[in-house]
Length: 355
Image (cartoon, rainbow, N blue to C red; front, side, top):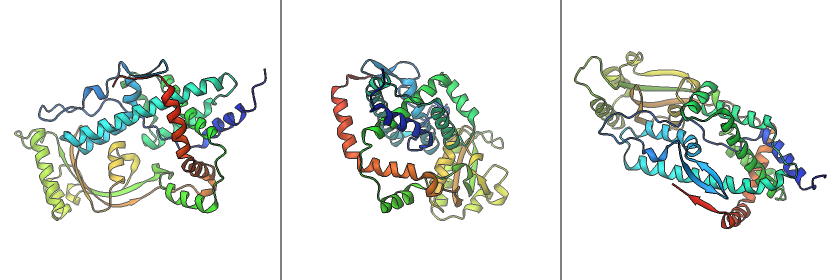
């Protein structure tokens, strides 16, 4: 039987997802940087448990593994940002977990709607999923696909399962586009304003370059047998306070830093974003010039840094992303209607949250 005409626009929306960057699913490693010191709280285990059920939606299961995979970039950045963990770390982590779980619940609610349309011929091309994963590798892993595969292995998630998760996210996006395709067309002024607002987030981040100064202290000081990770962290905190109080950063680096750049005052010039870990890159490139950052933690030790300049990668021209910008404008115009629609779906869905 020939599918009703209503399924055709949805198929078009699904195909249009090939060029969309609206979805930014956060995917990265589930296991956080180890924190072996007993005087600093570890990451709450319940937040990143890989087994078990996080929620059920209309009989479909959302696993803790899925939540953990999406939460991992947040965990990594918070661990780098808060070496002592503490209350703010806990609050931001729990807030992020709850937000991610709600997004996954809404995804399953909308997928229930899509399942009816799928029987009428709606589908998502495999190439759309492949292209979205390539985008994630470029923007979240500095172009290193092997890092994604390694993290999937750590989380005990297969690539096929990850692709299915990505597929569902793209379908949810397309469903929203289909639901509100009758939104008023974007006006030229609206398109220009939206492009000005969005172009920075659409730039080629793999071409970002930064110049900054750093002071690095290893977790264990080979020149001081009495040093411990705790005393090294205390020293890093003291150095950061001095820098924030106005001490000359380069001189502090020459006195304290234990890496190859100490003699140059910790200066590292024109470092590509791709040379930094994703979590450190996110923190450094989001910082204001001249702001003292840290101490930041990684498995090797503690870093205090100050950004001197950032050269951002090129943004795509409006002509190249016009369809995406127009869709962003339509989303904003229909956001109130969307919330009313999803709220109606939530009321009739059977949702059982476990965390």
